[in-house]
Image (cartoon, helix red, strand yellow):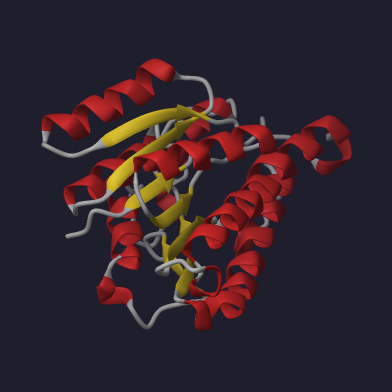
Length: 248
């Protein structure tokens, strides 16, 4: 149990929502970052408070540095930062690279890569013992797409998650001696709303036959891995990336 604050970006739905509820159950005070769906974010806060947890919702498009700074300012007022879950991410409609616009690629990288790096920057400023902090954990959400490349679907998304893998390894080495652990999770086909935002709401179930376990995963299964990495049970884990993908 802890009274430390965890910032979870993209915390209003899917994996972020499940991670917020799981972290609160383990004693974290949760800052639920959300890009646009305030009602969904407020519902997560209400669910946490109904179980005697503490949470706040803060609007934050991680494609905006100003929003990120405001998110961490709100976290500072809520308590001492102990963890960051870089969960916010976007996909686009399935498309070949030859048909991608610069605007699509730039937005993908701004949210999935630059946003995660800037959030980690703010977390390190607060948690690093080098800066007077008490240490902490950063968990970055990658994707099995980083290994598979997602041809004919969204190579740009896969590339953005490949960048997250490299960032996880490098930042982990950089801050390992300062009390901060950095780890990544590569989810496989998970039953969340992100597929609908990419134009294929049934994608996970349609491709379930390709998974060795022959089923899709749940947001709660990813959340369980996230909160384990945040816990002292994972105290010797850093610069590591865990596949939670049913073997895919």
